[in-house]
View: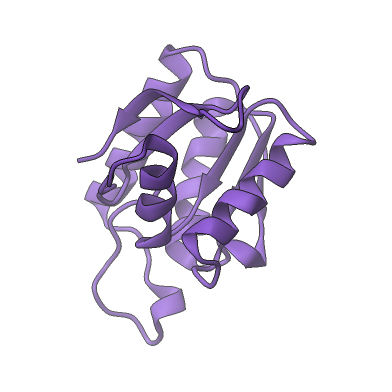
Length: 142
């Protein structure tokens, strides 16, 4: 999941909060995941404010605590993000990662074998039962 739309300016990039539109879009995304029957065991997010706020909204709707993970701050390459996700799936069956572009879109595109552009608040749900051929189950890109 990509964090919701953030304010364009703050004292530092790490402190940019979500806009009201960003909050609404994340809430709608979490509601859609809940309606589709996804119950995450683990919800990890970037330490940047906009991602933490996005994860908190999703946490309240999905009923799973959000945890901050420094590695999701955008430093990982797309392949690094996928390796990180696979390690989390060894601990839990359903995992939500809240992070940043371009890595979230690039990682989703690698799994789908075509570029996916996730807009702010967008998400992609993959079945990784077969790690060599993950399947896109659900997604909202815009």
